[in-house]
Image (cartoon, rainbow, N blue to C red; front, side):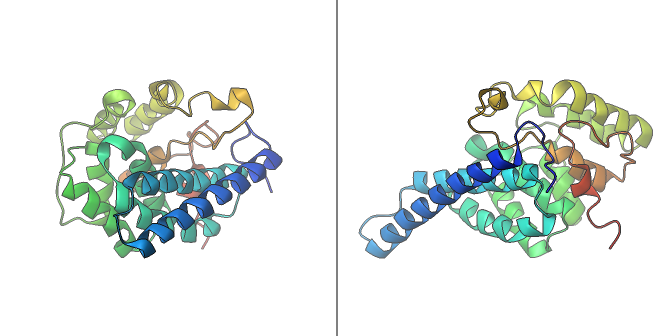
Length: 240
């Protein structure tokens, strides 16, 4: 198996997945016991911690080099947990990852619709969400003139505007985003620079960049091989 994110070895990723599996089983057990008990509602924090582990598991699988087909079952079970705990304030980025992955891997509308319901329920004003959701649900027609999280996602306003008139310039703007803005713009995230410590590293991926290429119909040949760009996820169905 060839790793996609080279900052960790396959062995390190395997050990990490084992730890996530243990945590997922532990939180599932706690939640199941609470649900059986029924004396008190399940603490939402347990759903949130379970969700974190499950998202991190998916990203780690991708970084390690697992086949894309292996991600789907984990993806669907992760969305089922997300429905129990999501708010844009706590999980904006994770929602964006899941939405982008679902679009790139062309999961069924009924799966992606669950994400749409959560986003629309919270009335989130966000251009990135809107561009991606409207691609799958053209009748939706929402299009915010802002992004929920300005750094680094404000660049997507330019990307989506340029796509209306100049696809070549759109790709160049996305290239700049990947090279200069995406990673630096997440410097306040707990996972930023975690590869330097050799303890835990899920992988660094701008999944929304891949989803935008698919949605906007861009030529991403110049993006292939760039750090953070999930090229094979964008093109997984090209030869099928």
